[in-house]
Image (cartoon, rainbow, N blue to C red; front, side):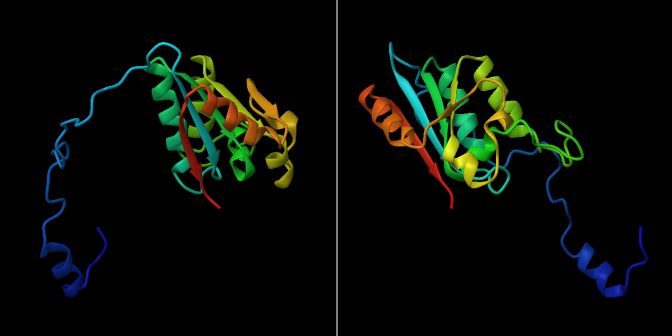
Length: 170
């Protein structure tokens, strides 16, 4: 341990920490609402307008869509605007596929799982173009879409009676 001044040592020891041992419960685990499962033909549709790694919004939206899929919902995610960057297979440093930091490929890995389990992923071509990304940079299984499809996809899923989760980050 580094040499500490008297005041540094006093500050360090006046409140013991960690105050709870690892594994201590901080919160209860009572689930208030029923664990709903999809009824026949129900759909869950997620819109994502959030930049990969700039917030947890995009990642959490993917996790929620995956959970809905596992509950039996037909589940689809539509990435548009800066959200389109979430669908790139070219993420990595110094080469694609290498993680420059832990979790760099969380989104990629979660999308691969979502697609493999039967979810649909749409990505707006215009959103890609705004950020210099190319269609051929998309992950395998991601369906490229026309810019006018954003609104029509929303109408399509609303008419199906989908539960719609719309995330937005500017």
